[in-house]
Image (cartoon, rainbow, N blue to C red):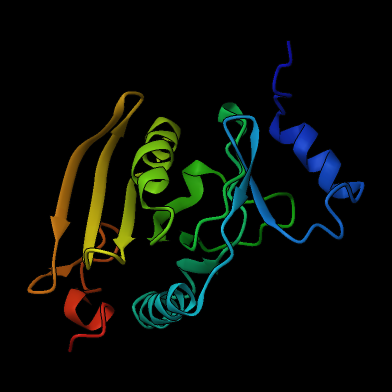
Length: 186
């Protein structure tokens, strides 16, 4: 009988510091104590991230919000170190460690091949962590899924908007994301 090796964030950090993953050709992240392989990003995925990066930096004040792209988020209580596609965090230096759940203002995942994982496991993880607002860009169906009101059992509020709509983050009511423009239909 074999069992999976479960890691804490501290153990994962130590492995990273010691170069355990140097030379690895796959991107990985720690989710619920398990190392998960991430699909390589294709040109469509990268295009959405560039679009969201431009939109994010245009609609935030750098004195209040840092916009991070595919950077680590530390969730030590949940043995997780995901690397969200777009992350709005409280503006400050993070020299002492990755941002944590209480630093997150908005978290966005761009999903094509990872849609089920992002809508199920990651939504559950982010809700348990208390991430206030989580968006999933559903590339396949050209929809934006908005998760709000987290609690340990999941998000209490889920809304879905399509190309005829727009979305606004709770933290930045003046930042209007035109969904048609996001999906290249405007």
